[in-house]
Length: 448
Image 1 (cartoon, one colour):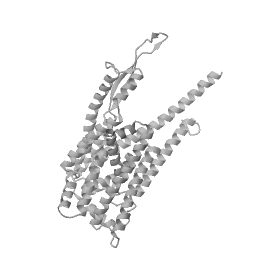
Image 2: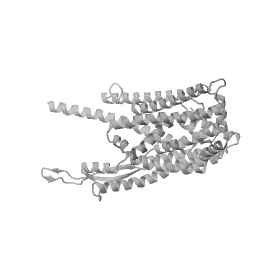
Image 3: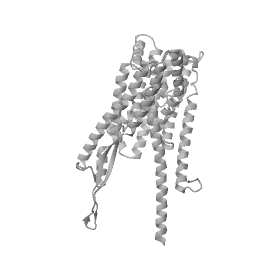
């Protein structure tokens, strides 16, 4: 058994780097969770609690889930990571239609840094709009402490919320660069997991008081286990395209024996959990603005805004239609952005590889694109079903929306991605240490 004293130097270094990344990730999550308990100055917490009690099961509950409970406590991190996600979506879509941004994408690291800079500026702008709307809603409902000047309250509250959103953006980027996994996904995952114990306790309390039948609670538990199993199976599902390598010519004659065979793996869900996060962000942004403005103002306009917020809230038919459409659309958009069949076909051609029965080049690219399209159809339907079906069942059974399919899907997929990245770090460093050892042995034999 290998001990730290007799492990190869490369393995010790690899484990040390992985451990430092994990420590940074845990520290970032701890800082994030502490930040969700720092209130915005001038806000009355009792009034905030009363507001959420009156709006249970609305879009505010879903927004609160993604903020990790920061919205319910009206923390400085109440906006969460949503402004950054919305800005990223807008910039990615603009990159596909704007020649200037498309040219920046082709410039490599320098172009990507420029696009990231534009994304940060847009994040601040969106956070400013959303923070002003939120503060206006709170002020209109008398949630500020008496005696505060209105201008000073707006200035302090808006500045606190925008600063919190910018901090969340920076923290997510740092986790991606110096931690393990995607920073945005990890922060959302941490917020969801932090609220799960309270949601489970609320479900058991509902069963104890008779609001939720015990058999229904057991059925939902088995349904959650079945959904987790189904998500794991689908996320590991692949379509393997057979690849053959041409025989190499040696000493003026073609090599003998069968051609080498490999596989090109294509996942059923190439986009991961990003479409669900993007769709939720797009749905939450206008819904939250309508909710806050509707509560803050009076008259016909306020009634219309409140109706809009209610119509696109959890469990409503329009919510199912819009949410499902956005998930499917973002599955195709994000898959097209991260996987280029033309580039893959060109790489295969340059490497002397081909798909049996398919001509190299454009024909191979078309074949890969057709396979990828069919897989994306299945993957998008699967993600939409997991996100929407449990939501329908749980809302109809009067179970807290916190236990919906969106949160389960995010938790399971992020955990799987985290484990795969940890394994990749371990494998890469083990491979590096083996290669160094093999090079040293070869050098020693040559010296003799």
